[in-house]
Image (cartoon, rainbow, N blue to C red; front, side, top):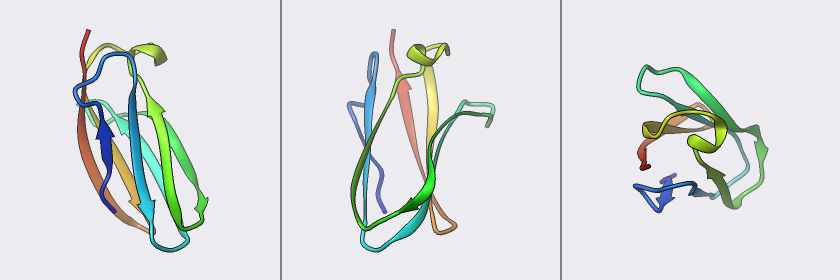
Amino acid sequence: HAILVYPNPYSGETQISYSLNKDAHVLIEVHNVLGEVIAVLANEEQRSGGYKYYFGAVGKGYANGVYLVKLTVNGESFVKRIVELK
């Protein structure tokens, strides 16, 4: 379950996409460098297929910089580092 993030680094907003080959419980969190959850993009059962979400730290009131996107599918986690530029 690879997480694709484009563009990265980004300015304003980036697209987070992934595919599921079977139905699964999906949790997508964005963490700051301190490990704190600053956004939950999904926390639900999803059917197999492709999904896209959009995220921008500054647009949510946070500073530009480094963040981690954590995708958890049926308890298995995948992490991608993202960078928001000014």
